[in-house]
Length: 489
Image (cartoon, rainbow, N blue to C red; front, top):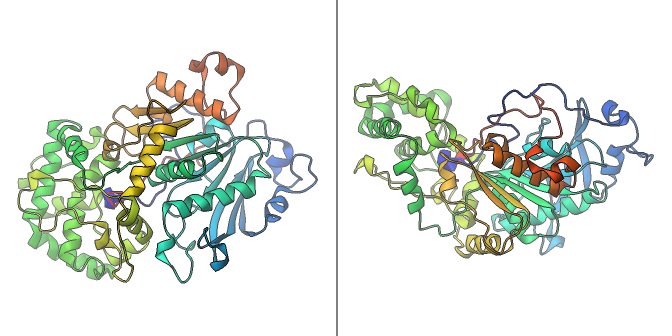
């Protein structure tokens, strides 16, 4: 998913509430024991401070503790096997964060699929259930990378096994119900965890999770781009993208100056020309991934009459000219590797460009150093898709109506149980439960509360009364539209 791929990458998901209006700000301190509020006393009558209990887990070590009202917040390292099938063959340190509220509350296991943030934040389900949150950095994203790095050990089963070991270690302390969540690649990660370890979690909330079952069949994306938004908006976007390729020579000169000024290089892609086109090819996808239809008035209406600077500025603001430099790609090598070996990546036609494109949508292989071997495994996503259709229990998928990634989505089948797919009207890659229509919002919130084992009696009697148990906190619940590098995942 560069920006399409790329968009799928960095930010890491929904520690926010897109579309949540009228929420009261302030620290969420609903009914915490005084010991937890002060962060100094023993935990829940055990006689041992929660930090000491966590650090008593073999392989767990403290990086730092950060204060936050109503919580204890820990940044930790956990010793993991490089290969869960052969644990004696070496270990690495995997970064974890823990937002501790109370061991009597449910726990949400959040995965972004990329680096973990080391600042306190709550995923939407954590706020809904007023619980604890464990967040895990995905293996091979630095610093959670084995040295030396055997890239064959970066796959979805190994990552799910990382998560299983963390859950098993912490479940002895956090004994109440657990939910898995994440957005985009994080939503995929939560799904894969459930597929390989279906007895661990009591429910899964997966946001905007792509499901590329057959990597070579991407016509669903082409149909999406033929109909998304309005014709006027599509024409504006298509016009700017086309003009950026028509004016390749003067804009690449500007790109060269930009790269020189910032010390950017292009060894991985092979040339500035390839990198330039990759950025331009992301433009339409990136717009719909990150923006709303209402933002279309920011796009030049008559691209042919726009100045070079206006075309450059629009492409840069939406796609980002730094994305395919060596410096922009390096952080996301693990994602591109997975996209090119298991996850798959979209390939869209964009017929409005005619023969102006020299390279088309370039594959993930072009964004991974050639020293790292890659071979695609087509059976992996088919296996996961089949499992979700036949075995999904207590799983909720939330998508945005105008998000390209939702064109190929997970669909629990007739043999699944208590599972749902819901769509935010007009939503983008930041879609969440708060943005759903009222009936779906209540139904989803009630399910999350039920799976977590904290649904109030009134909600059990009438799901329409469901609402988050914790107050909105402007810092913990900040809005993040998943900026997952559009690496077309």
